[in-house]
Length: 109
Length: 111
Image (cartoon, rainbow over all chains, first blue to last red; front, side):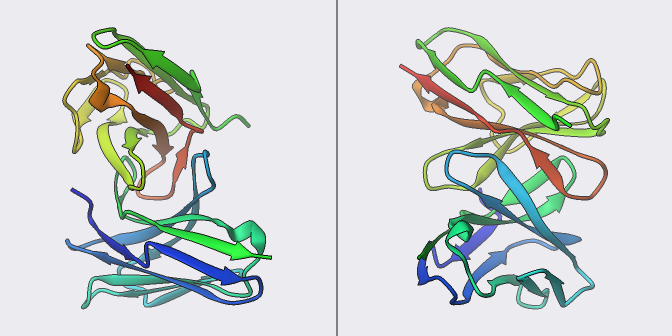
């Protein structure tokens, strides 16, 4: 079964707006990762946040983690049309990742 | 730097046929994994390996076999293809408890 749920399942915004995606997970974690998948392509790693971290930044990405609520959020600021993709959270590490069902983000030019 | 290479990219099989999906990585990673992705869903773990000669089952292993004779290669074998195995298959590698690197996927259709 999937580790958790992501919401929204789909998000459509205008270029320049911010996009926020949420992820909930079920079991204890050591870290949480976010991946991006362009249509028909493989997944690309975006950012990893460890269980003892509350927030992490990478360029236009900001990830938060609340282990008490078993939830994480990914914020993409100043979105671009090229950010259109599916975004997945994943718990575990190395060879054993458990993925959420993903959020399909569409950024309209 | 090739990263993770999967072949073939597309495959159509008849029910009952067998085949092997190839995966190779050139990053000397210890860990390799196979996932399947069904429409509108995230990835589910089929089998994984933590080193040459060591493999284990993931969440959905039935109907699939793997072996890891070298660090570089991690083939996935479908023993007797069924329509329920129609999916997109991704191979990934990682070094320790860090980010995973994914191949471009194999789109498999079983008719």
